[in-house]
Length: 460
Image (cartoon, rainbow, N blue to C red; front, side):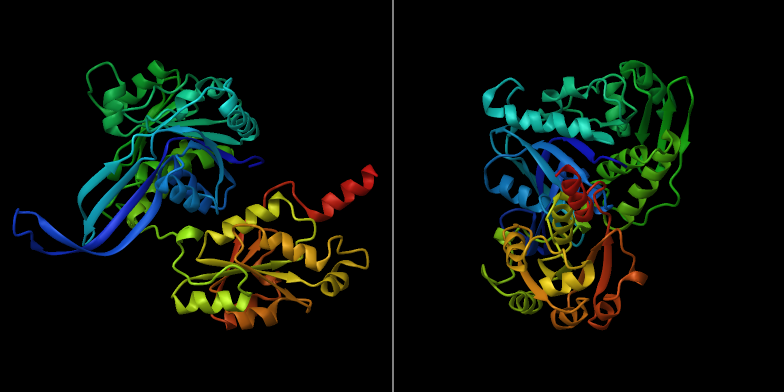
């Protein structure tokens, strides 16, 4: 993939209230749920974006959010790992609250009436639409997660005629896909509603929808039966699940399917291989507990970890451990901070409750890079990193490797960019001795400090 996966659609806030239900209410025959925990996560297009980002992919989400508590929470959950192009919202951010006991959903309460608003020509939203157009132009693939709240309608014209794969995940309240989609992914119930003729079978409906929607392919998702794929030209056939998932909560499986298919097409997979991969990923997702099993760090403003602004790296580490949280750390020179660095740091922060950045000192960089480096002084590099919202603390080390500071911090996860592997990483053993694990995240193509320096010198 040369460009990001761009996801267009309506995002909402999903909340699971988990508790126990061992008695009935005295004034009505309904269970009394004693709350034990409350978990927040993105829903709709936001969930698809988060799941794709967790695959290590650069993701740009074009969506609408309100400036209300649910919207701010949603943005805080997504922003560490997803680049957001935020369109204006009329009304309040949709919030769906499921009350659950012992893994079973007892009731769902929906609040919020928000719909995306604005037009490309309006001054108030012109900047957001320009950013959306730029994101679509740079995409390696586009996924539309249409939940019927206006985002797909606003961008309908820019979505026509894209020269990259376009996957459309429809919704009963949404609009019909634009013509020419590489893949449309309705559920069986959604396919029934989209097809004008009486429903006979998934095969017949998929083939009819290819014609009616002028799509290259349609994959009707069938739950534990896999999917039925039909392609332009009359080719069709079932795509079975690799094995029957043991899980029972399929919430979010459709988003996982669509995101996996879009990623596969962006990587150059055939439609058949992309749908087979999507069926496998959705099956594993359900087996692992579905969306209800996602446990995300709270946004910084809601973080239960008690450390204040200006806390040292070691104070942050102690606070995270005391609160039972998950400490993430990473390290490097961070000379000429660029978008690749920022993307890595945001994705790293999304893995836990706090992020500490370990920075090579000026002397350390000179020994590693030569007398002409660093270009930016240690003090300034630290100041810039501390200004990033995804960074909780910064510490400087003077050795050639961060092994000593890792042994003091004892991070749960040590993150490095994809140009490393664990065998060539001198600090990997120190991470293991400290009881942590190494996670390698893919780098953003086209960004390199050395390359930037070379380009600047060539232009001078």
